[in-house]
Every structure is written in structure tokens, then in C-alpha cells.
Amino acid sequence: MKVIAIASDKGGMGKSTAAVNLACAATEDGFKVAILDFDPQASVGRWARLRKKLGLPPRPLVETCVAIDIKDRLEELRASGAHLVILDTAGRDNNAITEAIDSADLVLTTCHPTDLELSTLGPTLARLKTKKTKHFVLLVDWTAGAARRRVDAIGAVNRAGGVVAPVTYTHRADYRVAIENGKGVTEYQPFEPAANEIRSVWSWLHAELSMSGDNAEAHAAVA
Ligand SMILES: Nc1ncnc2c1ncn2[C@@H]1O[C@H](COP(=O)(O)OP(=O)(O)O)[C@@H](O)[C@H]1O
Ligand SMILES: [Mg+2]
Image 1: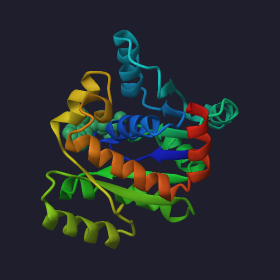
Image 2 (image 1 turned 180 degrees about the vertical axis):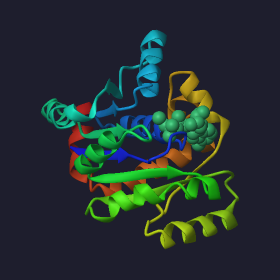
Image 3 (image 1 turned 120 degrees about the horizontal axis):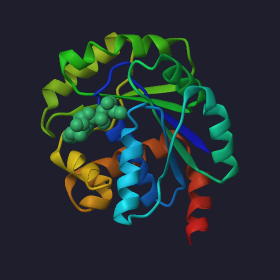
Image 4 (image 1 turned 90 degrees about the vertical axis):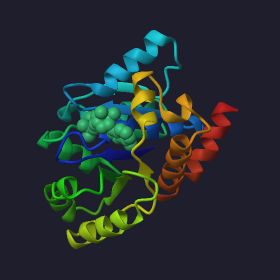
């Protein structure tokens, strides 16, 4: 079982949107996926309740969690045969961010390539500096063609000691509307650009996490 923490010290950076969409893409790929929602506002929990109400599949599994329970919950999920757990933290929840980072195989920090958002990365990068955990800043580009802005953002992240993921996704209405419909973009509009870009981010993560063994097991399990 692999664990991804989505962490930033600021809210509104797109963490829950990434958690939901990556979880849906990994589920579509045959993995047993759970999201642990640490946000007291439980936005992913609300999304899961909407799925239930609409009769959509109960996968990915979504559970709310508090920092103190994280290790026990991960053990339970491991025992239940989960392949991937995504920890969706809330900005400013110090304990949850620390525990999530300590429990993760890989940490992602979503960020738009704007000065305002990039300037909030400092505390998150400082947390990661002393850890061996893989960490990537996942840039959520405003438009697919904003290459110049992306290059500048990569420079800013690197100067702050961070690494930008070699894949990206963009700012599109589909991400918001899919969640409002209890779905990830791969379910909502499976053949549209948002679904394709999320699948490519998932595919990169899958390789970074060396999940090929789990993948074979997952495909055998769903066969
Ligand atoms: N790629 C995206 N495209 C369009 N809107 C997005 C995207 N990512 C996030 N949003 C919107 O930005 C807002 C904050 O996103 P959210 O995932 O809740 O952030 P966080 O979990 O970091 O607080 C939400 O209204 C969400 O719909
Ligand atoms: Mg959130």
C-alpha cells in the first residue's frame, strides 16, 4: 500500500480537488483507493455523501480522520487490502500536516503559478527540508498554453528548495463542475482534456510510487 499526502500550509490551493480527481483516476485504473479527509470542513466527505445520494459507486472509499488516528487508520486500510491512500489535509492544521507528511511515501503540494500562491510555499517546503519523503509541487496552470508563467514558477519553486512535478493539469470549469456532480473529471467527462491530463498525472504518480506490483495485483483482483 502506498500513501500520498496532499499538503500545503494554505487553504484554497486545490488540494481537495487533486485528492478527489487522482483518487478517481487511480480507481478507474483498477486500484483500491481510499481518501482520508483531515479537513474539519470535510469537503471530500461532502463529495462522498453526494455520491452516495446519487447512487454512484462507493469507490474511492472516503473517511474523515483526525491527526491522532492516522497510523491506526492506515493500518486498518492496509489490512483491508487498500492499494493507495490519499491524505487530504487542511491548510493551517499543523498536526495533521506533520502526521500526514510523516506517514506518506510521497507528498504533493498543489499550487497555481501566481506570485501570491508561490509565496505561501515557504513553510511547507521548510517542513519537507528535513524529511527524506519525496515531495513535488504540482503546478495547476491557468491555461494549457501558459508556458512562460510555468517556467518562471519552476524557477521560483527551485530557488525556494522545491521540485516541480514534470506533469501538470490546468484550471478548468470541469474540475469544479465534476465535484459538484459527485464525480471526478474522469467520470464526468471521460474523453475531455481535464480527464486526460488527470490520467497523465496519475500515470506519473503511479511510476513514482513504483506501484507496478500492486497494479498486477489490482488488475488480478478486479478481473
Ligand atoms: N484545476 C482546477 N480548475 C478549476 N477550479 C479549481 C481547480 N482546482 C481547484 N479549483 C477550485 O478552487 C477552489 C479551491 O479548491 P480546493 O480543492 O477546495 O482547495 P483546498 O482543498 O486546497 O482548500 C474550489 O472552488 C475548486 O473548485
Ligand atoms: Mg480542501
